[in-house]
Amino acid sequence: MKLFRTAFGATLLVACLGQPALATTQNVIFNGTISPTCTLVIATNGTMTVSPDLQTLSSHNSGGSAGTVTLTTTGGVSLSVDPVTTTTVPAADTTSTTWTPTYSSAGAHSIVETGSATAISTPGADLVSVHLAGTKGGSNRFANGNYQATVTLRCE
Amino acid sequence: MKFFGTLATVLAVGLIPAAAAAQSMSPMRGEVNSFTDVFAVRVFPANPYDQKIKVEIHVYDQDFQPVDARISPAVFQLGAQASRPVLVVVPFGGAAERKVRICTESIPFPNQQTQIRAQICGKFFGHRKS
Image 1 (cartoon, rainbow over the protein chains, first blue to last red):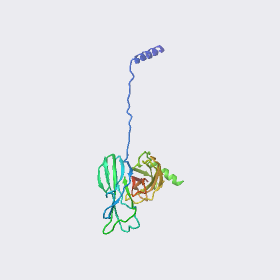
Image 2: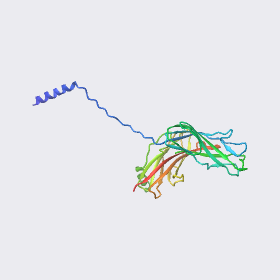
Image 3: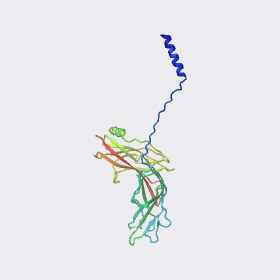
Image 4: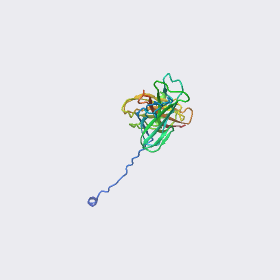
């Protein structure tokens, strides 16, 4: 019986020697989820200049310049500006001013200048131009001195 | 001690995302389940600039009214290209669920005539489980 077992095992071993090993494959699954993401990098602040009639202080006026911001996003976000609440005016300016912030975008997403929120659904990078205009009505005029205003650009 | 216990509970069921570099804030979306009367969110503001900036974290409701949340830390200096975790604990205020915005704000170049405040807001939804 022992001889039989040895002979059978040896025969089986010899029979298997000529056979290639069976290869197996197994897929390894990778998953990734990116939630909406937004990066704002302010490149330059803006400059406002006064109009010849002294009733508009704006980055649109001659010599003025928009603030520029680089926007990079995955999409699924919204871009907007807030009403201006933080301003500094010279003491000589005692009349009210209406401040109007706007923005436009060029790059992966073209946004015509607007003050409203814009939904961005696709990924990409843009250069956002931020403008600010202050206007006075009636006979009111901007005064000599330093003006400062803060525009909030929001991505959410 | 009770506070830390509560905190641990809400963190256990809350949102603990991985930090990501070169983003202004991550994550920007999230839903949190909590078994307590608060829920916690950990966000990671990042500074994409090559200079140190002052960062403020604010919490607002859906109408952009301030929410009385605990923010740790609420105001801090963030080094160039750096990111750090901020823990925000939001009370439900008796409601079963609450939507809030957590916003990272900074004015990287102050003292200019027209300065721009960059505000990155994430939307978070807390559910209170009984």
